[in-house]
Image 1 (cartoon, rainbow, N blue to C red):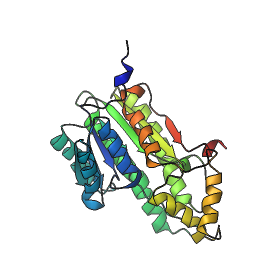
Image 2 (tube, one colour):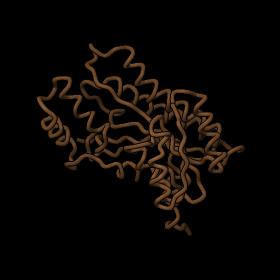
Image 3 (cartoon, rainbow, N blue to C red):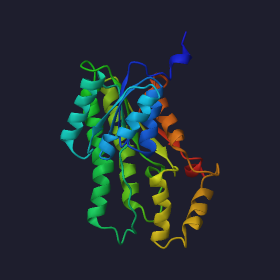
Image 4 (spheres, rainbow, N blue to C red):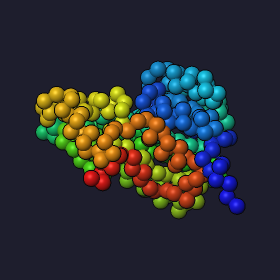
Length: 270
């Protein structure tokens, strides 16, 4: 008989969460730790996410921080090695680190376009690559890779072509990795998460971009129009996304791979 009370527990597992110094990444790290995982918090900011580590430890969890530029392969190798050395292994990788920028297509510079793709796509590719190397059977125990895409990987909006391109790429990279990992018998599941606007600094910046590009007269107007596009009538909270990541990390989803979990208040359904 299945013990459903344990399906969402992560006791004895080790997770790596990139971009976890603040926002969604920090909340994801806290959620995984609360469920029992030891968490390696990584970021290019705040000494790798020291504040997040302190919050986890204060709540009774186990965590370490690691300064980590996701676009550099050597730093992925170092981060994975740190997870094994300091926390005892690697079972869950959450590729959360990412940026966004805004420009009309006719004004978007090649440099900005490449920067978004380098962090949002190459960073995820490297995370998937080195997670597989660490977790694939028989050397590893298998595990769960969770890639942070976006509702922007499913639909388009004006002024954010680079971001949409990157998140669409993450969506299909996830599916390719999921099929490969399954067919090669690695024991690794790979899924993507697709939030709409979440109440974080990045969410605020996304709304402000519509004003900066002359698409809305002021922030309040832009915010109202975008919020109206969410049938549930509100933006997401970091905990809404963290709960979805926890679901994908846990054994509750052991037969789920190559899937996209949309957390958007109905935005993409409207």
